[in-house]
Length: 232
Image (cartoon, rainbow, N blue to C red; front, side):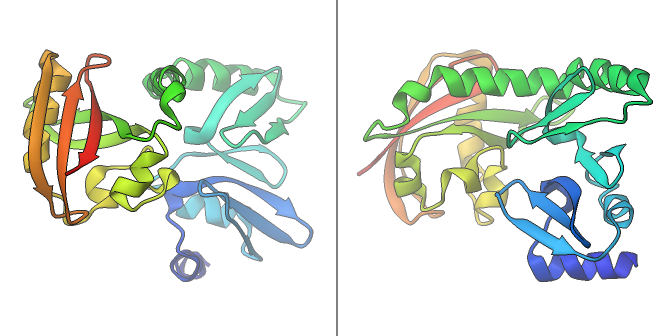
């Protein structure tokens, strides 16, 4: 059956980490994805959840309902609220389980990071419609403290014009996942600003989008780099 799951994922273009939750829908199970798609399958929810084990933790909170921990934004009185606004009632007979889940997930480093990202997005929501491309990226470092990747944490609408990708395709994704031919030289400047603050400017050709860009960088919070992008 696991091979059938792999085939389903491949056929439907599903990354296991992008499954927000699985729930019973008539005779089938519905896989709700982070991009808003819903994929139906006859494969048991338990089997699908097991197939995601290497990349996501799925909680079976009620009969036929599996929730990805990474997309749970709140747990209150046994009610689980997901990142897309959907809510699910946990098993009534195990209230202690839901309390423990709430304490573990809501106080986890992941959840604290999520709250930071939400604060940044709320802070810069005022430039959603700015006719200039703007984004905030988070630097990821290796054990030696060197910048190895950056993640888009906020993108305004004009970023779609500059980058040729939708906001959903960029937000919370690695630059090198979105742009597989991405140039590592960007990391040097972004890491410097994210760690040390100050401002930096770049005039350069971006092979990722085949454009000459002027980029102005600053540090909105420690570990993050804000970027204004203009096409030259």
